[in-house]
Length: 104
Image: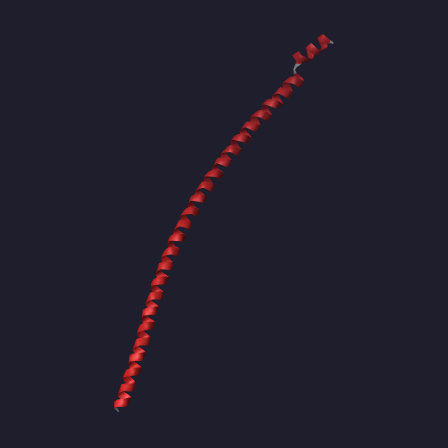
């Protein structure tokens, strides 16, 4: 009886010790995981902020590009109109034709 009682106490003590070590180890792993999660969350937050900033900059560049393109088309249209008018005036100017005949 005494021997069985002692044996049971040893098993219980050993079991307790093993379970205690398992619990302590699990708590440590949880703490390490929490630290890793916090680091990853901070890195993710920074990456998201960088992405949002870049997206904002890209949108601004697209708007500027569109404004420049609109201005270019406007200036090109004015230039083309002016050239067309110059060609028309040069080609169909009766005064110019008179000077050609006079000089001939």
